[in-house]
Image (cartoon, rainbow, N blue to C red; front, side, top):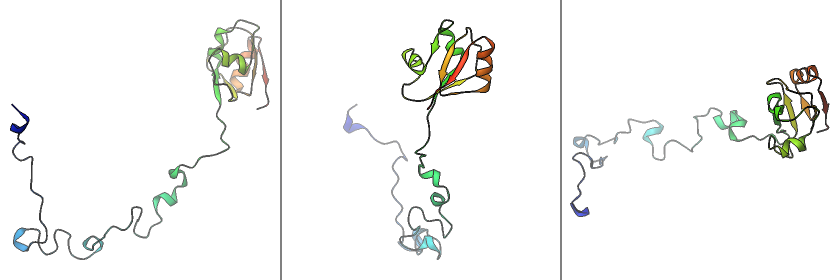
Length: 148
């Protein structure tokens, strides 16, 4: 079989409907557009965001167009179970966590309370949850809050 011998399957190619060619053609007179109304007129539909006089969707919801809060703070989240790799008595700072590839440098660090601490650590972070502080102090560790 060669390329010039290829043929479409029967029924795959359908001729386009020729509208406005008299009533006997089936799509004559109004050409399938119905009678009167916006859809019957040329150039119907208005512009892309037209909603028939209602307040457009994109104006009702400002966040839908990509509102970005310029004051949003992105936090590095670290959990207690992730601190298990540090030996007892270690001073855990954002720099130490960045060297251990646990956080991205430059972003403030928040300590969260998932898991149980294995050793007493001296942790210096920008924010800490109540449960994380309680669990860490229970095993003899301490938490110091850094200025963001």
